[in-house]
Image (cartoon, rainbow, N blue to C red; front, side):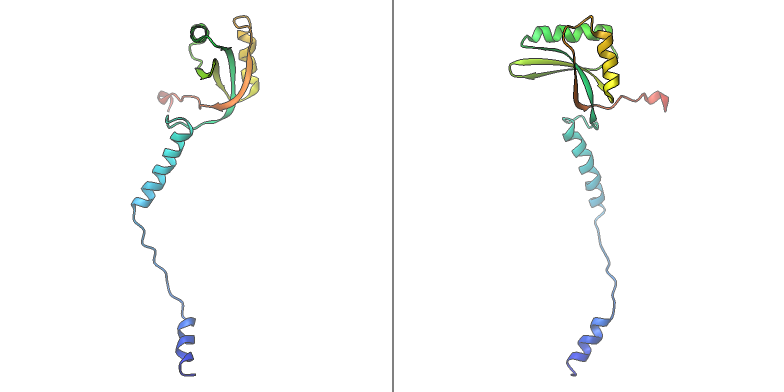
Length: 134
């Protein structure tokens, strides 16, 4: 009995836990978040979200893809365009639209310029903010 009493008495007392954390852990956690954002967008550091783009060209000619991109950029210089290559075809897509309706408006505007237009659901880049408006 003399052996168990001190053990029971010690088990009944509550202690405090002190966590000692290196301040660099917080720095690494925030850095990890920013690096993960960069990986998801191909290293640009921008966030992406789901949205739509309008495909204006699909074909095997690189020059025709660049010509289609230049033609659209001439009429809509503020619109972002993207060229991708998936062997053996090039795709030219335009815009970063949050809704299908916004993409549809562009399709109606450029239908006379391009023969085949498709609205593609895709990861889009956020709109650029103007720092002078802050």
